[in-house]
Structure formats: structure tokens, C-alpha cells
Image (cartoon, rainbow, N blue to C red):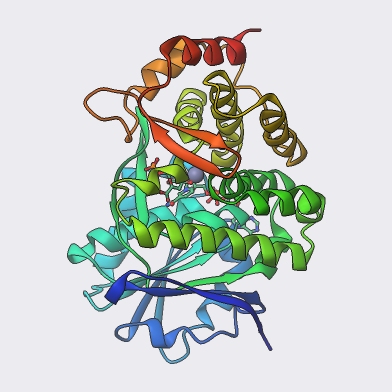
Length: 363
Ligand SMILES: NC(=O)c1ccc[n+]([C@@H]2O[C@H](COP(=O)([O-])OP(=O)(O)OC[C@H]3O[C@@H](n4cnc5c(N)ncnc54)[C@H](O)[C@@H]3O)[C@@H](O)[C@H]2O)c1
Ligand SMILES: O=C(O)C(=O)C[C@@H](O)[C@H](O)[C@H](O)COP(=O)(O)O
Ligand SMILES: [Zn+2]
């Protein structure tokens, strides 16, 4: 009926939770042991709901399942749309025992998770991610939130799910552009912490773009493992966790500049990682060959390699000034000492940063 390919755990003491990766899970895997009371509310969107809602409901036999369907898109990751979840919860008199379930990509996951963190000061929640990006990254680790016009994910909370259920079959309906966006975060894990995974990706990137099941299962497992290890060490980004932000300082500036949804998050992260790699090279950390290796993989994943036309160094600097990693007004960037070894620094030479920004914004 279903096949569990891999199972792992995010170790966070009494808030530890499993990540189940498999095929045929949607519609067949019993999630009721992870539900506190009798009530479940599934949060999904108008694209994912028609495809997978019925199967998701079947994962909660015997429970009262309510649904709220959000409009689809990064531009709806905002207060107004978040309120639709609270409206529904209150209209249906949901209590603190209701378990929220995110069924969709990272946008639905971040919003459902944030609603779960806030509703009646927090209710349990479950992640059922249906995009590659959400299966390898956003469903794990408990960062939840919404965007502000002036900055990505600027309002949010840490709130861990009870379980993450990853059905790789759901990726069969994902558009190719979204697959490439997900691959950006997969490549990220190789660049920040696992050089051998980078080697594996070089041999399997084409299979991943073709959604070959064995390759997908392995990439999702190794990505989740890397994220679970980092989150277990540093749940609230006091230190190590910031390496998961490789490419995001530049990437978030791109997303905000372009207008949410015009560049996919993964696309912006892909270009951002290329810029971070270029800066690591200028800083004398990685060599030309290593930079070219990172660049080649990003290229082969089908990701954009330049920021939007017209974006200037000043457009980057003004947006990066509100990056969440900054301390006392100092910009902190994630760079690479070598491929597979990232760290956070406030000490990049201003001229090198300027040169990277000039290089990537010249027409
Ligand atoms: N919380 C975290 O740790 C974290 C990590 C990475 C990214 N994020 C956030 O996640 C968001 C990006 O997530 P995303 O890339 O999943 O985007 P998304 O949620 O917008 O999903 C991408 C598109 O695919 C559609 N879709 C989803 N599942 C589908 C399926 N199985 N078949 C067909 N279409 C499907 C969606 O409706 C949407 O149109 C961003 O807001 C980003 O900031 C959060
Ligand atoms: O989980 C994390 O930590 C990450 O940084 C993962 C990122 O891929 C993700 O995009 C995250 O939402 C970024 O967080 P932010 O704190 O920079 O908004
Ligand atoms: Zn990201």
C-alpha cells in the first residue's frame, strides 16, 4: 500500500519528531497518533487542494477534519491571508486541541506553522510538504512566518511540527521550474556541510531533474539529515544554524526587489549562492576551480545565474541592511572556507563585497 524509504528524527528533547520519507504515503499513512484531540484542520491552497486533499484527509481516519484553502502564491504569504486561517478556526470554534496540518509547499507550510504557533498561543501542527523545496528544507526545523513588503520572513516564530510526512509521489505533478527551485536548497546542503553529497549531486543532478524516484529519495533523505543535524545543534539560530542561510542574504534582497513571487525563492537562493561563492573566491577562501564547480552545478540545476535586470549594488545593500543575521548594524554573510564548509562572517572586505555586487549587476 505504501513504502517507507527512509525515516529520521529531529532530536530536540521532548520536542523531537520524526521525518518519514516514502511513496504512497498520502492517503494511506495513519497520522492519527500525531493528533492531540479529535479535531484536525488542513491548511492547503487552491492548486494543491484539488490534487491531494482527499488523500490527506484519509490520513486521519476517525478524526473531524476541517479545511481552509488559501490563494496560491508567495505574494499571499502575508497578514491578510494568514487571517483567513484564524477566521476559519474561530468560525468553526476550534480549540487548543485542534491540530493544524500544512498540505502544500513552503508558503503553505510557513503560514500554517505560524498560525499554529499563534492560535490560542500555540496548537500542534503537522507538515505534509508537496514541493521538492518544502520536502528538503521548509518542512523541517520549525521556522514559520510571513513576508513584509520591506523584507522576507520578517514576522514569524519558531514552532516545531509533531511529524513531517514526505510522499515523494506528490512531486510527479510539480512543474519543472519548481523542481529546479527545490534543487537550489539541495545543492546548498552540499556547499555548506557535505562535500561528498556535492559529488553525488554532480553524478545525479540530471536524474533529479527527471524526478527519478531512487535519486529523489536519496537527495531528500540526505538534505533532511543535514538540516536535522544542524537544527538539533542550534534550534533558534544562535550560531551554526545561520549556515542554512547560504545565498539567502543576496537571495532575499532579490525576492524583495523583484516583488514576491516573481522570482521563486529557490531561484533567488541559486543566484545568491553563486554570489556568495564569488565573494568567497575574492576573499581568498575557495579557489577558482571550487567556484567553477559550484557554479556548474547551479547551472545544471536550471537556475538563474544573474539577478534581475536593473538591480543595482545599492538595491542589494539597502535590502541586506535589514537581514535577520545582522548584529549591531553589521552585515553578516555566509561564505565558504571550502566546498562543504560554510561559516558566518561580518568581516568580508567591503571592497570585495562591492566587487561581487558590481560583477553581478553590470549589464
Ligand atoms: N521555514 C523554512 O525553513 C523555509 C525554508 C525554505 C523556504 N521557505 C519558504 O518556502 C517558500 C517557498 O516554498 P516552495 O518553493 O515550496 O513554494 P510554494 O509553496 O509557493 O510552492 C510552489 C508552487 O507549487 C505548487 N505546488 C505545491 N505542491 C505541488 C504539487 N505537488 N504539484 C503541483 N504543484 C504544487 C504551489 O501551489 C505553488 O504554486 C518561501 O516562502 C520560502 O521563504 C521556508
Ligand atoms: O531553516 C533555516 O534556518 C534556513 O535558513 C532555511 C532557509 O532555506 C529558509 O529559506 C529560511 O526560511 C530562511 O530563514 P530566514 O530566517 O533567513 O528568513
Ligand atoms: Zn531557503
